[in-house]
Image (cartoon, rainbow, N blue to C red; front, side, top):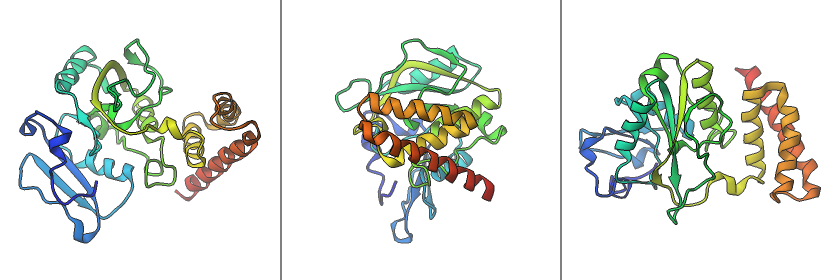
Length: 258
């Protein structure tokens, strides 16, 4: 976020006492746009690097709470959100990561969510960062971070949340899902731009990180999904497939460079 004052917190936590929370703001900014906090409960790190995953990794490394949330500066937390989180971790005490729901401008569920909640064994369900909560100690202990090649401002502009969750599962830690909303997030979700080149690239690269060579088969099914649901035309299917193939090649090149 890029602001010179903390007034946005009033809309972030309406009718809530922000002194109850430990808030860390990662302000990715130019030299003349530093953000300053005089409130000891609200800390600010002014970073000269850019990229959403970089800012969230910086937050993980510098946060002080036991249970962390990723937030955007335009969300509105629901009045009882903290009790919902505490109850979730009492219900699923073995979970390192618990995801929730969020609402759109019209106070409707922003996505089609599963009705059944509980511990999860896979990372197939798409995630948004504002849905995620996690135990900081577990994540630090296992060296789990956001993949900085993914996320807004990076090479692939989405998919970082699924990779984060998958890293939790790969380390034999547990995740859970609770069918209740935490907050309101106005605006469009990433599903509204599934047909874009950047979205196809990011989704394919993210799937390659999870499925490796099985992704080539997945890509055929995904392109047909985009056509069947009218995100792309019949004639754009070949183009979409080539876009996905280029994303895999780009990711392989980046991996070789590492």
